[in-house]
Image (cartoon, rainbow, N blue to C red; front, side, top):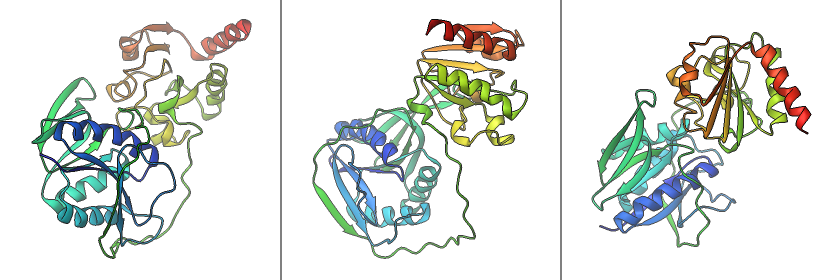
Length: 310
């Protein structure tokens, strides 16, 4: 079987990660990779493979509904073997809409993608990361690729292609806009992460952990309650099953109980160290090193030890 494997994401860095997954699928299916742009070509260097520009939708912002319709129209004519998208908030919506429009299968949040020429297989975490399930879809198919599971593809020359899909109307109506607070760093690229949990008594105390993260040349993360419930940090800092998945060299969990949803987002860290007043906290089961103690005493001691080594 031969054909094309399409890659689309509203995020340029994520698209280049997905391109690496697409290359694995394309190799097994004797296909070629196409990086898809909708409406206009992005100025940034694209990842491996050629480019497919879907003309018709106008504007710099393409909603998930418009992206799904444009991809569906093009796929009905060009018949790609697979369409891979990043498992971002928008990517998940585009993938589900696209699969429904085309009446084909959709694999969600997968990694380890491969193809036997007739379909593709992938792996996804289930039961909060305690089990890895292997899933399969016959071609043609749609899949969302787990963000952070693949390295970014190196830029490669490739054939450019254009397809006019006609104007696409968006049935959604924007009633207002608010600027979303952005995280200071990309946690997926951090080598050291100091992560805060409910053991932190008040928002102002996060400065203590931020100072420690800076001293360790790392980044500040958090468990879900601190971002989603309390709003102390932007959601980009949230590490866990419903947040960011990270794999730093060192993960320091401070005042985090260690529920499965959080552990699923950091269990692949090279070294995990934890500080908690509860000696029976589940986080210690996922840790290489643990300190049973009050973070308000332990963190200053760590900072003094770091300062003495400078």
